[in-house]
Length: 443
Ligand code: XUL
Ligand code: CO
Image (cartoon, rainbow, N blue to C red):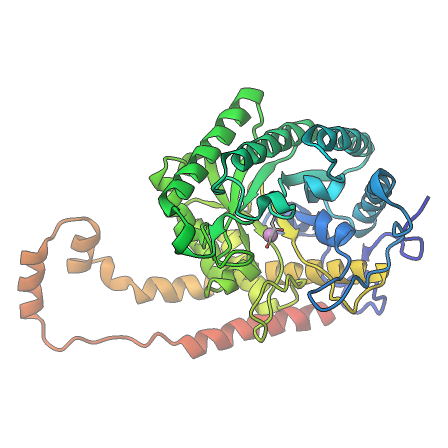
């Protein structure tokens, strides 16, 4: 049984190929900086957008045409598993990710939900025996069902907290069974709408208690995947607790959790927080907390989480620059938490979208690698901070001075000379590298 029978395996054909169903830049076996593209990029398909999303929005019903549309319930869930593994193989990604509700329908009771999950997990496990694809991460959807209307681990209702704990407990067991390399906590509705009805301190304390229990349970069952927090500043709640990396880091440090977590950074969440994607990657990286990436992009003209497939080469280049400086993503990967537009409703669009995203990150990798190899920014930056390598600057960084000595030094100074930051020049150089990569691959 084939679900995508008009599409065959997507191959690398190079940028001169006119075949739309081929990679122009992503060549899994090509070695860049000592590692294959496949090893560095570690692409993953997001089950929810690719096999669940129907294209509905607040103004209209679903538009997507999917080969499993005629089915319902568990039959539909099983067809989705079959289709998913066919898709993973054809698009040639090494990983996938899911929320438990993406793979199996919720039952009327928690016990029934577990039963549905067990059946589908067993099926996925069978597929994984013969497929190359692995589970990058799984997570709990503790935000869609009405029970989560006030949040999950930060809900004012302890019964809701308990239910959320049960779902994450089951998720860790599933993660262990399927060999998940990470487990993600995205806040969902962990945040608030108004302080008029909110005990913010209790909610944050409870969130930390919840995370500690998850850490303890993972240890108890021997789940060794990396725990990841995925920050987002707003949506669905007005104020999400895991606002951005800096806020998340302060939270983890305050509650003695920093050793157990890293961050899963999503591009569109970064821009919603008023940051660039690379700012969030950098903040995580310099703190040793860059774990994984939800690869997508927002729209400058739209204020919400549009979750578009990443096609902006400038952004993928600066992202790959951070990832290479991080020496890769470790057990993390580039997960396409991205959905085709409502108007791109044909099954084939799922392939076009992933090809576009994979090629955009492949170009980003090539360009970032060359920028690093040529030390374009490094040399400029070390020159810019050169004053900290000798004299008073060296005393500052080595802790050999104080306000008294610095005052004396300042009083002895003549006119201070600054150097240009050369921002426009640097941007032009990055453009030159981007264009040269394009020219080189067309030649
Ligand atoms: C929501 C979002 C989620 C998480 C997983 O904005 O990004 O899909 O990635 O729950
Ligand atoms: Co995400």
